[in-house]
Image 1 (cartoon, helix red, strand yellow):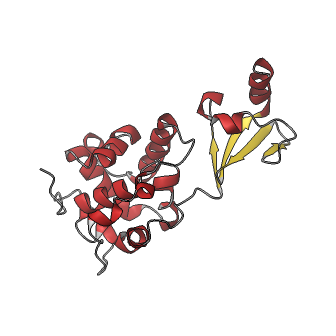
Image 2: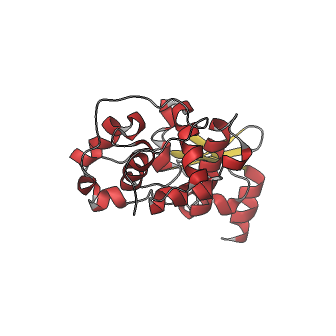
Image 3: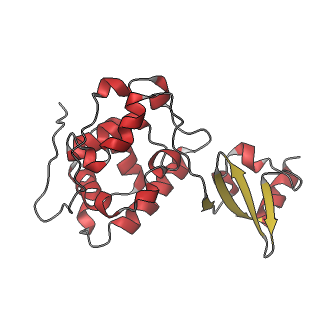
Length: 207
């Protein structure tokens, strides 16, 4: 059975933002739009994005209580947080800048329902101060989902680029070849940076 109260751990949790606003009932997050993941964001890249977020936010947390992005995403996706995942998120969340909140969906590929359930599971009905943000979709499930507008992801391999972006040739309006040999491909408000030579070599092999 999943408990919906926050379970703090002495000496581990950081101060959580306070809010008098509570999450609307979870039944309000059952709409199909709120159970939808962003298009073209692979599991591999979503795990990597979450790992990067956690590495930056978990400085100072004991190594034995840290988890990687895949572990944390599976906790949110299942709604079940073990000791390590709970401790890591209790530590990381208060230190994350507000601007990364939309990235939990757009870059880490968590659904709005998973975010609502997970934040309530870890922090209680106030969802760590995120209740007002999440309630926007609980009250209007047709509201556009968060995007990664303005974010640029530097990829190490063309395998990490979504296929619609990977197919963008030099004359595509969403492709920008920069001086210095870097190419920016924009898809769904997210920019992917890749070395031009690597991209062109791949495209030449796949006419």
